[in-house]
Image 1: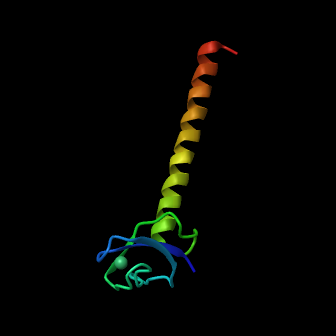
Image 2: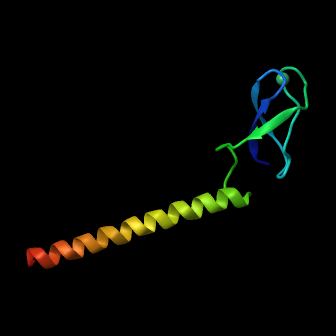
Amino acid sequence: MPIYEFECEGCGERFEELVAVGVEAAPCTACGSTRTRRLLSAFAPPGRQPRGARVRSDESRRREREAARGERLAAAKKRRGGE
Ligand SMILES: [Zn+2]
């Protein structure tokens, strides 16, 4: 189960909870209020949430783009340098 970070709207407490996928709120660990909201968190393990998967693929696309640009630069340098 992923760990989510929650913020209590009652007392402002922030806490982390292991909750099932899709659970939006967990009772506050400080005051017991159920008026908590889930924060966007980096604690959720990869592979369980669409949002996480989208971020990961954006990141890998960016890396691929950078790698491709590096290769193009290297090729251009080679042509100019006449190696
Ligand atoms: Zn609270």
